[in-house]
Image 1 (cartoon, protein in one colour):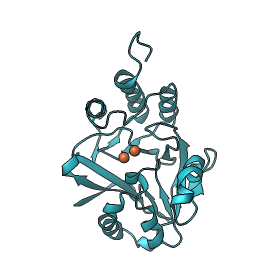
Image 2 (cartoon, rainbow, N blue to C red):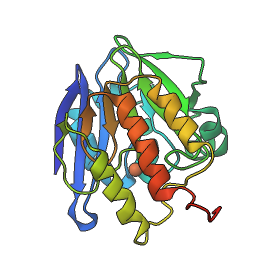
Image 3 (cartoon, helix red, strand yellow):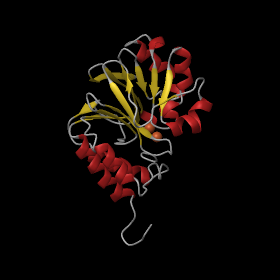
Length: 246
Ligand SMILES: [Fe+2]
Ligand SMILES: [Fe+2]
């Protein structure tokens, strides 16, 4: 049911494919001095995910639980992890903590502001706020600065059961995923605002080498180019129509 792949040194992608919705959910475990889990996952997936994480580390030693925005696949099982690991804390931006997490979670979150870093040992992370990208006022992405890995949540969403990692361009899959979402009950999944292009460009400037997507393959390659390509695709699929002004 779960599949685990080391996508960078001591960084593991633990994914669960749900055939009923043709969607894969990936969670990333950073096995460092202070272990970090990015995406607490759905509450209903917790037993499965806990078992997979326990094959890699002692679950009680998890120290940081990060996610992009307040939504069940991102942080539904947060309290289960906080119960399992007494020293663990949610890690998020100020808006996430004040608006949702500090009320929902058993313990207050650790807020990481844009000028702060979170050192877990070998690795150093920055939480970059990206309001409404992919969605949610509180949204952000986690960037690991030493190896330039971007944990990008729902950005680069791909439907289906994909290969864990790829060095081939994923942009066409992402475009079809957006088009498919827009044509069905998930229309409006990703909003397009006058900030979208700027936010994606600010991520491109970090020059990531690995894009760790929540839904779909992890991409190795020119992350800056991929983010600029994604900005174009999002504008094309979701942006204002020529002349309509809407
Ligand atoms: Fe989401
Ligand atoms: Fe998601």
